[in-house]
Image (cartoon, rainbow, N blue to C red):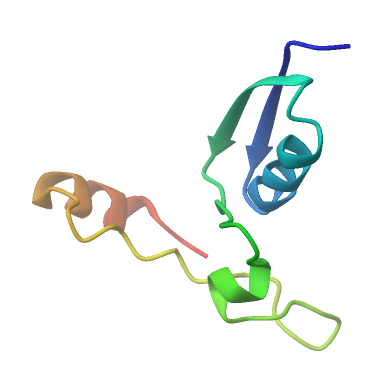
Length: 83
């Protein structure tokens, strides 16, 4: 099977990145939906600085907005974000 569209929501963005890397001849499109977008050689802890486990909260604080986010977008996003 080829021509796959792979969607990675939330933490699944990290997983989707790895899958797309390992199946690049099969994945045509990779879509991130409110997701963690990994970098080569980095894991979830590198992205968040937190490890989720039985003794830690499962919720993450919102990811910081890029520095070049327009003020209008920053206000809207800030009003709608939550862990």
